[in-house]
Length: 201
Image (tube, rainbow, N blue to C red; front, side, top):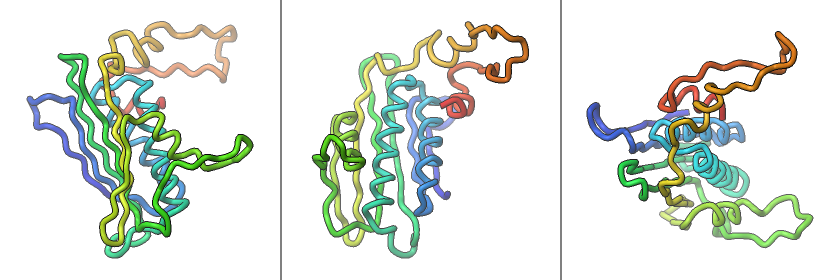
């Protein structure tokens, strides 16, 4: 997995992130991309529910590219490109966004929302993206196709003190049986600990 991540310089606002990643054209790339996105979004202060929404959108877009489109052409052969940008303003508590895009080698048809039958096992990916994202679309450029989605962020979507991992570590569930292997205590620091947050998701 190759890519780069940019964030503001030291001393600047730490509530923006941008990452571009080139993933191998294999199903396991979905998991790797999700973990990176979760880490980045948790690190800038986005709450668990909206992190999960963004992760699901990313998973659906990458899965669709792997299932329905060709890999990127040379020089990035056998890969798919994934990028995201996010910015939140905790001071205002009312504005922010997460933009996710997936670039592939295109297919014989344009990505569109399908209307699967009730018993159908597939065809719901872009319907899920449409339900979770405020906007989404497709751009074609030569021999590549990019599908993008934008999730709007409100003050309710931000991580709050005493929520998520902090609340779980502050008030652990007691085990009835000492040494019960089904109960694992995981010390988790402040919500800014992106590595811990992504490990738990």
